[in-house]
Length: 202
Image 1 (tube, rainbow, N blue to C red):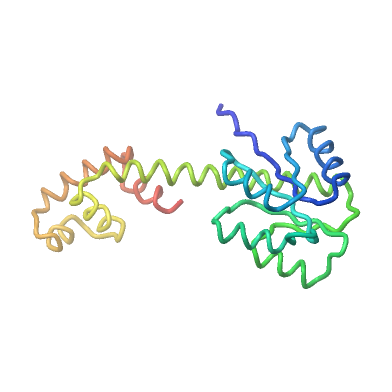
Image 2 (image 1 turned 90 degrees about the horizontal axis):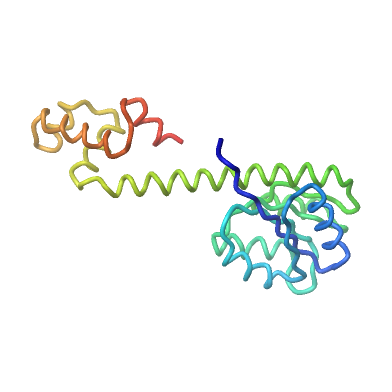
């Protein structure tokens, strides 16, 4: 059984007492959290962070609003589950947050269990995203081992072409196509055509 990677929860709120209370709450259920009082501090930490993570952003902060911060994160290609907190929340703000990719919008004051439920959902999403990224990276490394001709044959196989069709398109013999196909299966660590299709459908 593989151990799941710990997920860091980044809390960004200019009110220190709010951040402190949330860090304490998360710590009480063994969830690692880091608090920041400004968006810039958070972005610096995020840029050097390794491992799965999610973020809780306050909607209204003096220097950079939560929505502006999420826009910056999107521009910097920091894709992670985001939850918004607000004491001044309204429908347009919630809609904007969701359009920018937020997964939840909680109105202060909120119930501790409601907050934890939202955090746990964000953690699940963060882990799933990291696992998907890891699978894609592993697959890219495997594909890099293929020759140019093998990559041509792979693309044709994924389009559903037969060995004869591939041979005609590439100007080689069906037997040569079958050799390339066997090499592809070996290098991508699959044993059946169905398995080959499945790894590119994930």
